[in-house]
Image (tube, rainbow over all chains, first blue to last red; front, side, top):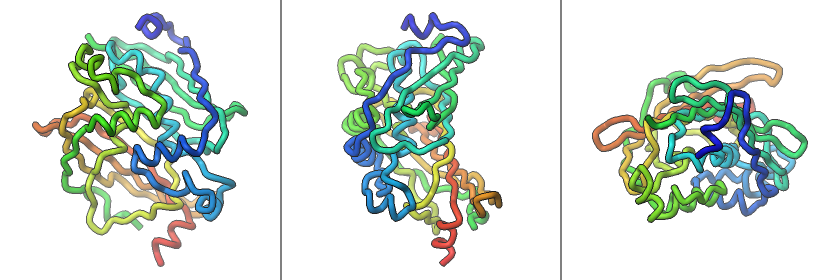
Length: 134
Length: 149
């Protein structure tokens, strides 16, 4: 708990580096979420759609990013989580998850969050409003 | 193309926050935190139960809006928001429905683009909203051609 509550405005939580994106990651996400759009799992279909290869579900990356807060769900919860999808995530990309405390009002911790690939290109960016329990 | 659907919503569908589905989902996003998957940990937590990851509502069935069909291929997910009153508890029943909030078109450097704003919602048994999501889906020229054929 301490890490989150000790943060000052402008501080970041420790970034998390994911394992390189694998096909099995995306097959698992397809199965777990029910999103079977084949551009995420089948090369031929991705190429047909004009992509160089399969791409991760945007929601896979968004789902991963929220785990920065999983350790703190006893002291608060994610009240609002909003993301813009900026760039595609391809197989073998190495994604790093970032968060920065931007603002605090009463019990609300406002974070800026993003995920970047190995070339430091932002793939998703957005905000998390983490509400502390009274 | 979708203007006439603005404001339309589906009939609510009853969904359960299934323990197995939560575990599978948590695993798929690399987040097997005990608050989601360890039964004893959940019992001891402030919730008295395991909870679901924030983006879990993707799993639910929201029902169908009559005559509204989107192709599975060629859409771009532009934005996504989740808003919660409280976390979802494993085992609880949630009534889910989807609504078409807006549709607008733009012409730019990439030609035609349509923006569809969809909202998925979950209510408890007493009819209180627990979560609301908003998705902005971008429809490209290529997809429009398929849709209008």
